[in-house]
Every structure is written in C-alpha cells, then in structure tokens.
Image 1 (tube, helix red, strand yellow):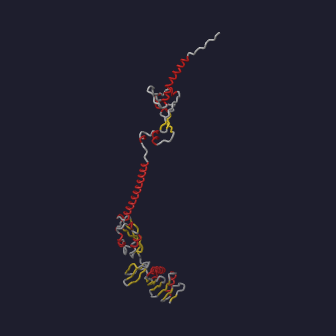
Image 2 (cartoon, helix red, strand yellow):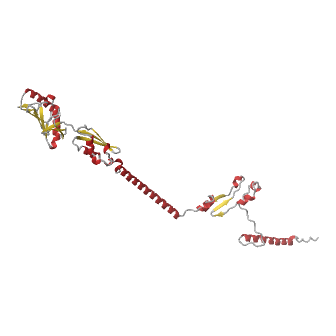
Image 3 (spheres, helix red, strand yellow):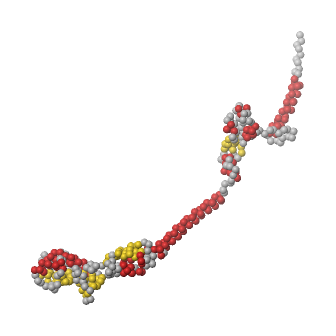
Length: 367
C-alpha cells in the first residue's frame, strides 16, 4: 500500500504574511523608540501623553480611587537644584498634603528659602552683600565711639559745672550775718569783735575756706587762747573760742599787766585781781616754762603763806620768792614743792630771817 503524501502547511504563506505585517507593525514602535531617544516626532505620529505629576495624580485620582485603596505606589522623581522630590502616597488622607523633600547636597540661602517656603517676601529677599555688612559694622562702631565721646563730654561738663557751683558760685558764699560765736565773755571779747576778724573771708564760698586758716585768724586776737571753726551750711561759720584768763600779773606804772597760764600778756588793768601772784618772768623761749613753774609753786602754798608772798621770780628753772617783810626765799626747782611750802611756813613762824633756803627741804637753811 502506498503511503499518503505529506500535506503542505497551510499557514506558511499566511504566517509569512503575518510576519511581514508584524514587521511592518513593529516598525512604527521602533521608530517611536528612536523618537524617544532624541529624534524629532514625525507629523503623522501622535505625541505621547505626558505622565501626570504628583499634584496631577492627586487631582486625577479621587480620594476613593481603587488605585489608592489597593496601595499602588506611583513615584515621581525630579532632580532640580540638587533636590529629589518623591511622592509616597498613603492610605491616610493626611499624607496627601504635599510632596516630601529630601536633600541630596547642601543648598544655598535662596534655594533653602524656596524649599522651606519662607513666605511670599522670602523669594524676593536677597542676602546683604559683604560690603553692606562691612558698612553697617563700620557705622555701628562709629556710633558706639560717638556715644562714648558724648558720655565722657557730658560727665566732664557735669563735673566742671558742679565744681563751679560748689567752689566758685555765690551759692555758698560766706555771709557775715551767719557767723555764730560762742565762748566769749561779752565784755572784753564780743561776737562783733570775732566776726570782724573774718571780714576778709566774707563773700568767699565756705567750701573753699580752710578751717585751720580761719582758726589762726581768730586766735590773732590776743584775748583768744584757742578757737575751733566749723562750716554752718550753706553760708555761715560756727566759731567756738576759749578766752584767755589772768593767772598772774606784772606790776607796771599805769597799773598791772595780766598774764595767762602760758605767760602771754593779754590785757592791762588798773588793779590786780585778787588771788593771783605778782610775778617776774623770763623772756623768750623760757617764758612759758617760767609761767608754768609759778603756777605749780603758787598752787602748793596755803592761804596763809600766799598772803606773805609779794613777788615770785622765775627764770624757767629756778624760782625765788619775795615776802612782804622783804625776806628772800630760795625755792630752787619745782620738785618737792608741797614739802617746801610746809617747811617755809614753819620757818617763817619760828624764825625771823632775811633769807630762807628751802631748795633742800630736808635740810633748810636760814640766815
């Protein structure tokens, strides 16, 4: 039996035709890919639709869109000014507010203001230049210097003005009617006498007056032994004086000269006051010591012996007494003066003599 002849495939021709049609149909795709790589699109081909951006996706897909419910993720990356913007949708509506910005490199101030959204005015604000900053710093430095100078000038002016008011203005000028005096007896020494001594200082601010000079001026009056001056604000002085008192006297032709305890002749009188001795004192530097020795000897005598003494002579170291009878007493120094006074009282009552030597009271001598 003869085997059957093989059948010729039916679809070869059609397959070739389909292959040709497939090649012809793939040519537009390859041409489209070529156009995508950089060639210009032919006018016969339709332009491809631009994929929606992140904001367009939000507008295109409603909140209840199945694509969002199924968790489909669509990403869009844009590389501009060193930034990558990625849209990461989430099921929660709060994630739809806007894109998440992630920085890939450091950015400048203007780019940071654009990315962070510094407001409407931030986009138009430009950073100050270095020259402007230097100029502002220079102005600030000069303002500070001028302020310091003004402060110093103001302080100096204030000090000068205050010094003039205090030391040179008539605000504190001495007024003669505001001088207060105390310690005077009102007879030999009065307030007017003391105030008249301060006439050269009237009209001078008391802030410039030296109290030491004022005291020396007041003690220029021989009747004043000591003076203490103090300011009496705003235009006066307070003067406290210690007036000299007679501690002894010296007989003169017209009367007596009164002497104080320092040996200073300060006044004259017609008659000697009672209770003080007549003296003859050394002159010069020894006079104060001579006066003090007289006071010591006179104070060691009792009243009965004082009545017998008519004169005490002192040279500063040795003393000699003259009695009313004319007899002389060699007193010596002021040492043991109380004992010498007692011995002299006994000798005068027991013996009449022209000379009594009590310089050594343990061994008195009469002649």
